[in-house]
Image (tube, rainbow, N blue to C red):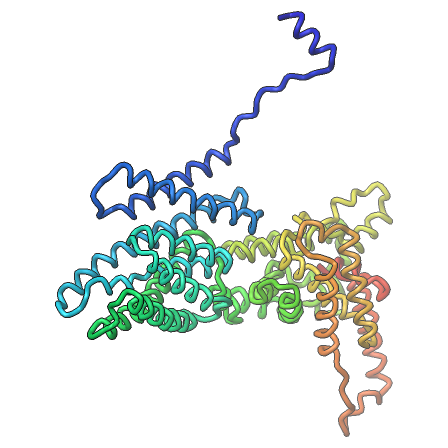
Length: 519
């Protein structure tokens, strides 16, 4: 044995222990088995107990959930170890089927009381489209589509009717597509109405195929099916706020509430830091236009832009856009202290957002909206005083933008601030400015962790240029308002312009440095 080990060492062969299954895989396997068992139990709930039947249903369910999981990981690889979303999908699937079970008993009992109506028709009012609609609102439409397929197959196994799988799939898909980019709660009712119409058409078609298309069955089927859409809307309206709260998720409906400029944070920003408030509104216009061009949620982009600088309310006078006097408060501070004050507005913004229960997606963007950018002016000023100064002391703590929306806010924030130093903002100069700012972030590595492509950057530059060119449009001189007359006025304007450039601590030739100096 000793000799064998010696031979292995001399040949440079290292023996490594066999890799055990990692913790994440065990957790995922447990979740898969538990939800499969729960769904199998719900499906066979009122049937005569049969071990063979239960095991067979369990194997079918676990196969469907495994396919769902693999598709989820392929389509959303960033959620690889995000158990929150996996747990949410499991809750939606099992909860949806459980609600369906409850309504099944209620509807069958109600139909039996009306002796003239075939109780089998009551199944068309079972609101199994609740799950797909919630999946579309809370996750995305791709997940909702796969969810509709799985729900339809499980419903067909449950009721032993393959045609009912078609009905459930059509209802779920219609409900899910009805809430894409849902921007108000009334859109839920519109989606429910269309889902009810599709349910009517599908149920009447199935009734025709099954040979029951006669007499009272026709209006009864139509009423039950249309009621399905109404019940779905009521249940989604009830469960959506609860699931948003429990899983800390952000839907377009909750984003619209934050878009209200009378929100406490925005009102406080307007009063305490009016320059920052105005800057944030313009950044919102920039990122919304660019977001639509690169295919991300424009509503999330605008809301994030509105809130990205809320931390400046703590010390508004230290940021150039809020300074009304001719003397900058940074003149009395060391470069190191000035850098710390600028950096602190990110941390302050995150804390304020958490206090006011702003969604996590927006808090992340507040934290990432400067990435790990260098505060160029104060770093250079400190370096002139001490050559051994560390560059890391004058960089924002980051992290770098992790999403395309965060990257859009980063670039729009810098572009809007830098555009303020353009003396003659012609379209050509605006385009050159945007090109310079975005290229700076690209070369500095601030866009390394997001999913923006070179084509996306081209679209972003084009949309930024369009918005800024419109903002800096020219005006004609109005009769009786000749502002060029009067030497005193010209001298005062010249003095203020020079002082403004000094306060910004940058030249017009380096607009990126200008932005980082101002925060």
